[in-house]
Image: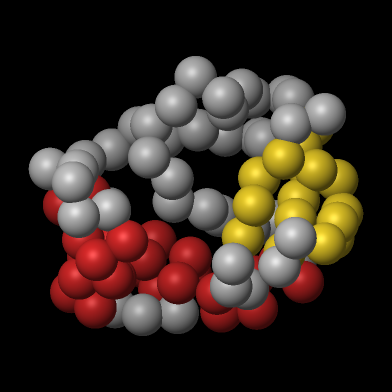
Length: 88
């Protein structure tokens, strides 16, 4: 089973039944597929992708960022730019 790894439980979202994760586009993610959710290299639970929305970073709403990271849009974009400095 493929993993989705987290280094931080942003906004304590991984404790919820449903949560978001903003990721770089990848063929790894598929609606309906189960994934092993890993936090700090430890199994946390199994989760199934229910929805995928493909957006440019700038198209993600303030509300989506706040739910995902706990930060507003500007702070979140700055954080993602630091995490992925080679991605435009």
